[in-house]
Image 1 (cartoon, rainbow, N blue to C red):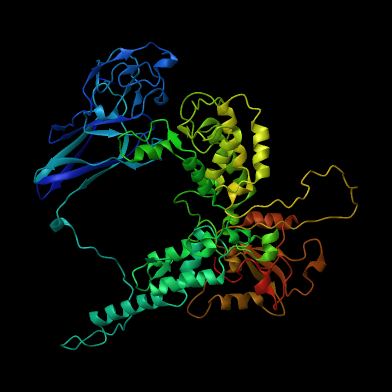
Image 2: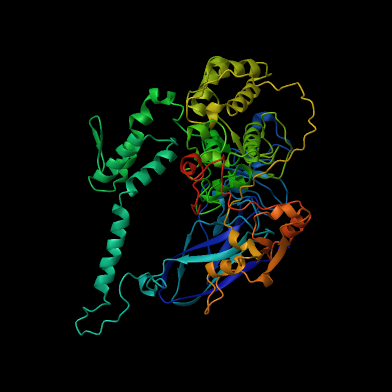
Length: 640
């Protein structure tokens, strides 16, 4: 009930009296909510940011000239109706309106400043009640030596509070902290104890420190460190195939600790200077000369998440509750919630699928011109058709409807309105607010192209966009149309020079006659993760050579251990001559065993719906021992 006091209470014991910082980890669906904080039964309050003023009520549907509504003005329906820094206080007839001269009871909604709450802690929305956890800004409280009580209480008139799962106290003095330690540290010296009275035997602290420093120095000064770091860093700066000269110049700067460009000098003069290395990357001719862009191997495909962020930043994404709101940092994080973005476009912050990140730095596409030229293109590893379609759908949705769930958008349902491409962005958490500069349509599209493609949009593409979007009914519609078309161009998705090849891309209308010849296709599935193939398909019944026993021996079976090979009791037997005795010609094993946890594979095999091709590797074309290293885009025998 609204008139009951709901609270959480903690008993906290400290040895040292003084000021401590109190914060909470919490989840909250929508709309800011306050909690009163009591320490030893004394309420912790704060001053309101603004003086209290009377409310102004314009009726249930204020006229257009009243928007945006100012502080203590209403009636508002959502945060977009309020001025910068304010939010629409959804009044449930009992809650207060902070900063406004009005009590509970009238049920009207007013725009308020969250800084006018005088309660101990104000919780901003995170996007969900159980899966979106953030931390509040800490408040200072005084704790006495010994036992203390801390109570977080829902104020009278409020029904719901946040979902709190942790309370955190900071400020404990150093004497109360335990020394840091870690279990089972690595050792690089003899384990023979030191029995000498002077501590100079085989086990002593001095040798451990010396050996540890020596190992770290060996790693740091190893010859491959500089070119390895330089290649990876250059790739992240937008050049997937740096020339050997470029990598050498960067490596020299890293090793020498200095880099000069004109009269400017960079670096500390010591080995391993990152300042010198980065300067060598961004100031090199290969990064700055326009003539280098003519090389088809120059540049890179942009990462999917960087395309999304580039669109939002360059087109000035603005949240519904504006960035000017003086709240804790998590508030704006909620307003740009990219909901499960990694599942939609193949990439998202902190969502690495493996320890090798989203893509391999040496990846070469297994088809197209890049394969023949051996061009590395790491980002194309996640450029699958589902990811590409989801990326375009999400960016189209962001442009047309704002950040929300409309037509597979990047975020969630904000809780109101429908999907309308009318420039109002009502069903969104925010929108793109940039207004292009220019006196005519051509200049405005050029301005958009400058921001979205670094001015690399071709004249032919620009003319097509002008012709297509020029028929839209108003300026806002023209802008949304131009933005959508620009983000579909190759110039937006890459950093290299784009030239048309002039080939006809129209669909073929002729249909060839059906063939009566039998046809089968091999479909390759490249599965991410690890697979111990030698325990997936195992020799079972073999003669005259007992391949199964050789398998067990190779996998560690001996008089003392069974090894890691599978006993036959854990294998599902399949025969090699199902329906066709010729299937096992030259094969010493008449049956194999499938891992016990793969009964579906056995069933499919028994019904002749699946087969095994052993010892094939990851091949894009036919190779032999003399050319496999040059003709294989994926590094065979690498654990990644």
